[in-house]
Length: 196
Image 1 (cartoon, rainbow, N blue to C red):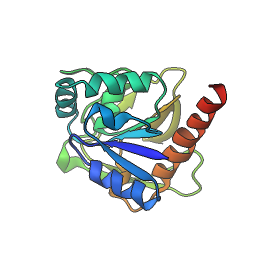
Image 2: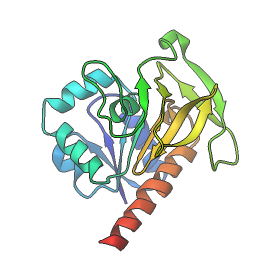
Image 3: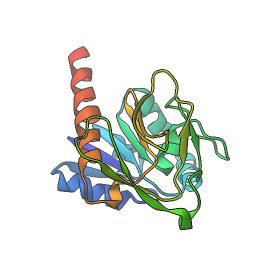
C-alpha cells in the first residue's frame, strides 16, 4: 500500500505523519513520476489558489486530474476539497465531485472553531477542526453525506473521492485517515483488480 500526499504547499507533512503512524508507505507527491503505483492520494489543506497555480505551471495538475478521473482514490481536506468540488474563483475548482464548495465560508482565521461531529459509521464523535473552512452545498444524487454541521455537509464521498471541510490531520484521532485507507484505497483497489 502506497499513499501519496500532494506536497507542493499546505499541511502535507501532518497527513504524511499520520499515514506513517498507520505503518503505510507515504509518498510526497511533487512531480508526475510520484503518482506512479499509488493506491490513493491526499490533497491537504492550504491555499487552494496557490495549489492550482503551482499545479498548472507543470504537468502535475493535468496528470493528477487524469488519474482521479481514472479512479485513483483521493481525499481533499479544506483547500483540497475546494479543488475537487465545484467552486467559483480564479482558478475554479476541478468539478470532480458533484457538490458546490464555497471558499472560507465559515469565516476567517479568527473564526476558527472545533465542533464534535457524528460521522456515519463511527461509534464516537469526532472533533472537527474548522480553519477558514469551505462550506459544502447542493450535493448531487451520487454524493453520500457522511457528516454534517448545523444541517450542512462537512464530509462527503462520491465514488473514489472523499472531501472534508475540516482538518483531521490537526487532531490525534486517526479514524478519518483509517476510513480513507480502508473504504476507498483498500476496497476500491481490490474492486479494480477483480475487474481487470
